[in-house]
Length: 300
Image (cartoon, rainbow, N blue to C red):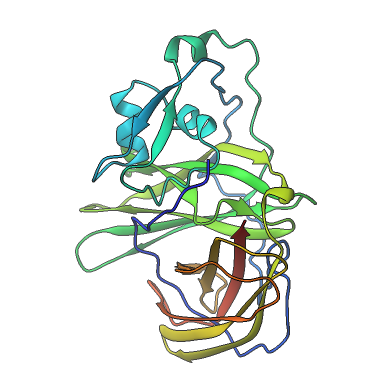
C-alpha cells in the first residue's frame, strides 16, 4: 500500500566527515566503524510468526492512532497487523489513510506460519533523558544479499529480578534494511523510574523485493559536527522519477554505539537525472558524535 506518511516519534542523529563521492545507498549504505555482532543474553528468538490469510476489513486511520493501539482494539497481534500491511510504515501513519485488519479466527487457523529470517541483533542500548525516559535502540544486521522488509522487534524492560515492567514494539525507520548493512529500530519509554535491563525479541523479518524501489544515490554530502550536534547536507540523484524519498542518518559514538537516528523526507517528487538538494540537523542522545551511516530509500 502506497502512502504519504508523517513522522510520529523523535529521531535524533548526526554525521561524519564530508564525503564528496557518489554512493548508491539505496542498496549499499556506507558506514564508519561498523559495530560487530555481540552475543548478549538480552536477545530472544521467536520461532514462528503467524501470517493472516483471511478476508480483511478496512480501518481508516484517526488522529492519535498507533499500530499497537489499533492491534489491541481489534484483538490481533502487531505482527499480524504488520503482515497484512507490508507497505505501511508503523512509525508514520497518516490520518485518513486506510489499513487492512485481518480476521483473528483465520489467523489462528492458518496452516503454515513462516518463521522470521535469522537476522542478527548486533547491539541493544538505551539512553536516559532528563525526564526519566529511555530512548532505546536495537541494531539489526542484514547479512544477506537481498533487502529485508517487515522488520520488527519487541522491546521488554526487565527489573533487577528479571520481571517485565513494560514492553513496546519497534520498527526500522525505513521500510527496508539494505543488503550487507545494519539499521536500528527505535522505541521510547517514558517515566522509567528504576534500574532496568532491555531485552529484545525479533518478531518479523522477511526477504524484500528491490524492484519495488527506485535506485537512488547521495551526492556531494557535507557534514559539520560540533560535539553532539551536527548539520548535514547534500544532493539526491534518482534513476527515475520518485514520489517519495527518505534519507536516514544513524549516529555512532566513539565506542561504536548507536546514539541517535533521524529521517529526512522529501516534500516534492524528484525528477530522473536531476540533483535535488537536502539538509537537516541531527544530534546525539548519548556521547559526542564520532561516525554516521547514511541510507536512502526512494519509491516511484
